[in-house]
Image 1 (cartoon, rainbow, N blue to C red):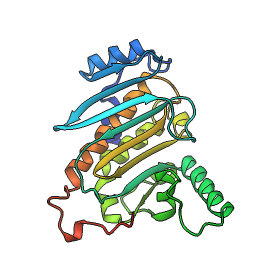
Image 2 (cartoon, one colour; image 1 turned 30 degrees about the horizontal axis):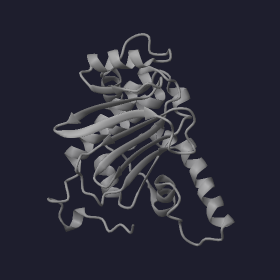
Image 3 (spheres, rainbow, N blue to C red; image 1 turned 90 degrees about the horizontal axis):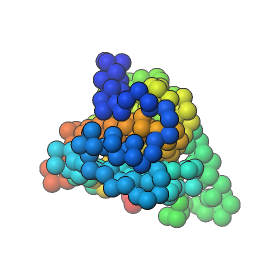
Image 4 (tube, rainbow, N blue to C red; image 1 turned 30 degrees about the vertical axis):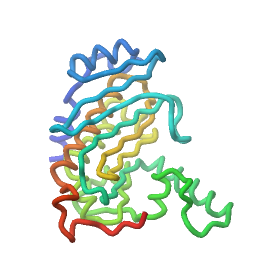
Length: 243
């Protein structure tokens, strides 16, 4: 099942055969036009904003200067306002970045003799300290080799990180150019009712932009389908998360 899904998602919105070369703003604009996506190009080469909607819920993917120290060069940042339960908190992070952030958080805490996680640390770093890594029988071994899932409640993680999301994430790191992408920072989060994506634009290719866009849309669709909004969530659906 996962192999069939990965093939299907891997070909969705494929930008063409010249995927490996660095993409110019003109390349991105042409690709976005074919995808019927709204785009705002910036004067700086490599910087742009893409947008659309998922069943009436807006999403945005932008590329620009990094907002995290662990990202080098350009950063791809995505957000989908899916209106999920705002207390649902789940994060998928690739293993290389997990190791770096856990080491950095430990050093920051021990160097300052803190006994609690500082609010000044990036959110993804705090989550690694606050929440446990989750796993369940349906997760492929290859997924767990590449990614860690952290959350307060395993039920929410299972609802969101189901087959299409797992397949899309694996396709990103095992498909074309995946070996290099697997080493680059990648974070997918569900927080405050929104889906967030952050990754290093390592290859500067249309393929990488297409992967990011498709991952954001698949994750947003999964949240819409499997996580009820706050207005319809029952007592058993609302986690007790300490902010």
